[in-house]
Length: 481
Image 1 (cartoon, rainbow, N blue to C red):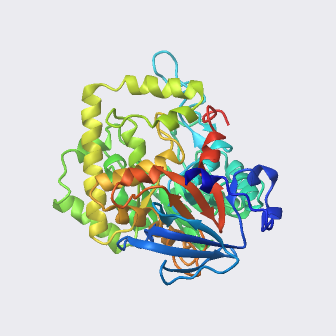
Image 2 (cartoon, rainbow, N blue to C red; image 1 turned 60 degrees about the vertical axis):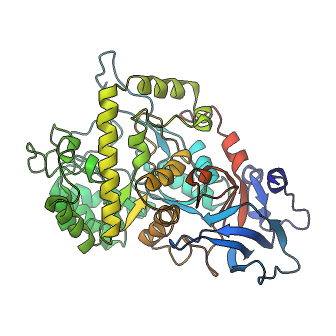
């Protein structure tokens, strides 16, 4: 059945093929005017229970109907895929994704970062392919170091020149003085923050991200300017606490508080990133205690989302074996860099990080149960062990480890992201009238969440892409291109 699905050649027509370059066409496995996905197990993205033996009719790039296979008749001219044993979920909406890689550290032999600072490597060829292969049909780049790269990738994907998801392109980071990154502009004052938001808005950026050393005044100015243009701003903060950011009107906060919220550190000073790690304070906090509950209520009351990025922290432990396919995708240098970093994780560090991840999971579960909007993304950075696409799968699995049901985890990674981006009318769930952004999985992630990794076909706007071919195109090159 697998080979039959992935070798479909549509000779009847060249429906929509003329809009795609040869580079994109070689990854397309299903392309017809009308398609019927029959006898599927359906997880619709709303968090509702799984529906068995369903049929989905696709035409014109949209979902035309969804219903029980016994009563949903496929049109006579439809290309029919019999998907007994398969599950279909909505296309994932990645909310902390990048087109760059940070595996290679610009350090000397003593571990000191060399001038001009920590440098990242753009991977605009492999990242979009791996995201799409994993079922990510929409993503936010959530900060970048080369703004025009993300915009150019988006333009080429939209023009059918290269494969990849729909892209919400973030502007370069809004960062203050003291950054360790050599590729980031460091803001001078609030006016500089406003100018930067205005410039990148004019260039085509559609979201913004504040970073660790931004000041309160710069953050407030950037938020106001972004909102003036109708865009949202998220933040991975340190010098500004979460309550300060909430008061300034921020829309989203990255990574969860255990790794980024500094208000509980004794050495925290206004507009300064403290020397102590946030974990040293959060390790002592009770998620059910008044301090954390007050933070949760503050977030919920002001409609501030939180983005879960559990995979990037899990990569700094030895608890989860590296994904063999992810290791295959890495360049030789990246694989060596990651495995070396992994080998240096001490038992003490592993125990400490594991405890903080558990605490973060507890926070995320409590936040959702209190009515908070939790988003999901892998943040493919850190020590190089979290890769585009592979990390998106792991995020779903770790959300289930955090206590969410598979249907709830998929809801977080699909409909929630679409709602935040204002795209829930067109994507995020499986319903008639929405874009046919669908993931065909050979298995049942509702009962076995690791089955989310068994993706065979990814439909984006009704065009089916061969997941295996997209992954094969990246073998040995992540970290290089």
